[in-house]
Image (cartoon, rainbow, N blue to C red):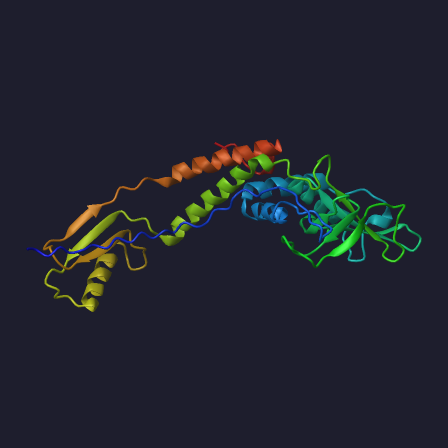
Length: 307
């Protein structure tokens, strides 16, 4: 009876965990004074990551913020710079506008003089701020998590109730939101932003890996006469002959050790993903602009690019 030879098939899963939409549930506990910004207290980090990775989103936010800043900000001579670090009023407005567009909120630290006059203004990183349930306290930390315990505590902006020992308050703006925290007006486009990011990553990964195989070449070595070095020499000669010494191979090579006496070349017909992913990116991009009620041409997107 002929011996049955087993073939082992290995499936390599190269997919990675995709980012899910964040849970925006706001919770607080008796052992801490702040309200969680999202269930894991990291909702702003999710927004920041989208801003960093999506070119369309960043173009809209940065471009609109620059439109708000305009050609300069008119103010009294006193406020040409707004703090001892030398932040100009133009940069200050740009920082506030950027956070407003990203989160629909912003935070300003107000520093008072001994006469209780406003002496300095700082545009805080909005993602680093949390508030108390009653809104009377604002907490600031460089990083937040569900159980963060190291943070700085400030009074919220109340000019008539300045602490003489601290002389600083934080103006925390969240607009008309009824929740403790604001959420982006473009929140409905989160999936579209993620789609554009993932589509771009897919194309980059495909190009980087170079796995665009068009043919499978199976070479016989039924008698096992060729040594590993001789096999490498054959493979190299084929590559140099058909792809050039510096080009990436566009075929797969296999050596069949038994049951085969002739060379076999099989063509692989693979679907061209470029058009499909371009369509995904185009649709996602359009939805992002709709979410911002923005005209693409204002942000460098020509009519040809938008088709």
